[in-house]
Structures are given as C-alpha cells and as structure tokens.
Image (tube, rainbow, N blue to C red; front, side, top):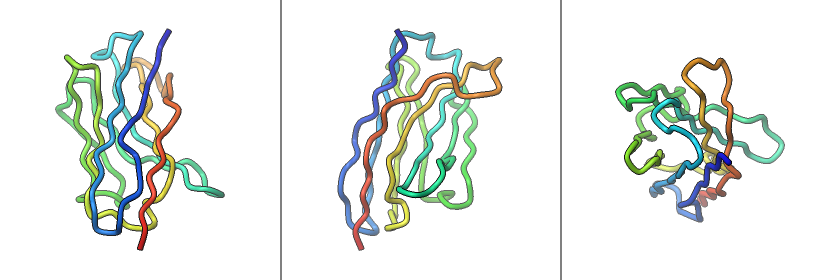
Length: 119
C-alpha cells in the first residue's frame, strides 16, 4: 500500500531551521508531483509548496518564499522541506502529499509531523 511518512519535526526557536523529510513507498515516485501543506489548530490547511516530478520546478506561497526550500531525491523516494528563519506563525502540523501527474488533486497524504516555533 502507499505510504508517506514524515519525519524531522520538533521544537525550534524563532530564527532557527528544521529539515523535514517525507519518504514514500508503494508508488512510482517519479510519476508524482509532491507537495507540502501545514495546518495549525483552528485554521484551514495551508499550501506550503510543491515540486514537480523531476525536481526541476518548485512553487511557494508568499508566506514562505525565500525561507523554505523543497527538494527531492527520486532514487531515495524522498522529498524534503528545508525551513529557515522560522517564525512562531510557522507552528503547525506539516504534511507531505503526492499528486499523480494526470490528477487534479493530491492522491495520498502522510500523517504529519509537528513543528513548533517558540519566540
């Protein structure tokens, strides 16, 4: 079965960095665009960024642009989210997701990893 497993979350002070990983199994990884999302308590799920199947293009919202970087290693079936200059408002559960290239939606989701940024 398809599994996406996030890791790397934790507690960090404002201005610090964290690197999240998401390892996929049970799918042909290179057939999927990968995305990162986050959800804070009481808020809707928020798009954090996406990377196309080959890793040649990324898209970020203004809220994280310049601070977060997505990369992927198709040989390792892993996508990464490097988070720098973290702010308290980045505190959320972070999820990775996989979107089949011919699909208009994300098909698979991980269970999430908690990121807490203290002031």
